[in-house]
Length: 326
Image (cartoon, one colour):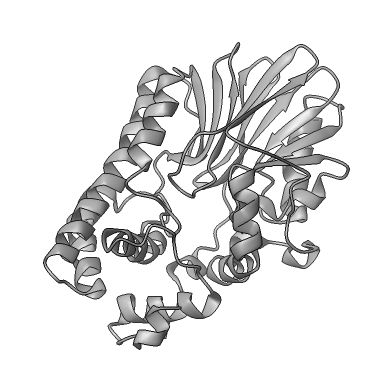
């Protein structure tokens, strides 16, 4: 059996470090996971830590081109390994996450770490430098405000979408938003741990903030109203289109493989050019199918479940019922 689509994605990506406002930067990488940078009076806050401490060093190197202030805070937009395992690279920083994100790390952090490293090796360069799971020092419910001197930083558990713990970082004065994977731009949303029914409301909450600039989880920094709306609408359209297909399939008694084939056929013409489309779709359809069947809490992805799912959907082999239920 050939490996995941992502195992063949080995090309290095060009990094952009875009100024969104005074002391506010988007670190983007042609569809790879993004980070954000907020420079306060005495220190720096980083949004999403990257996948490994070694990869975090590149974010720090970009920060050092604009300030010598220490990185004092790291905000985790959610629990996925590719976002959080580089946190130890920001020595001495306080790590902040929603209480739900911490609960998900407790429940499934180790399985997610093992699973993600197996799926996408290029994104875990220097994985030997990872000391273990990332644990937040501070958790919050719904919303907290961090004052970095005179700079107000709102950290908001915006709602369920990409995961149950999705958190955005909002600069209300500057109207700059770091959206995490609630929003993607030109990149396929990964929905393996998603809440499809809640995602539109979460996007509405983001839209209601009326950001002037938005850094998505993947894709370029969005700095015009048209681009921001394109990111919001594209994410909404993809997740809605997929969930409609899954709900129709489940109502008709279709198998997961049948729903997958229908989704690929229907969605590739519109979305197939987005980065990581082939990687995401098996995970996305699996979760959409589960939610359409009434499973609110996403099942845990283990490295073993990854392989069995991929074999079934990409290669047509049957999964045993016990394997499906893991």
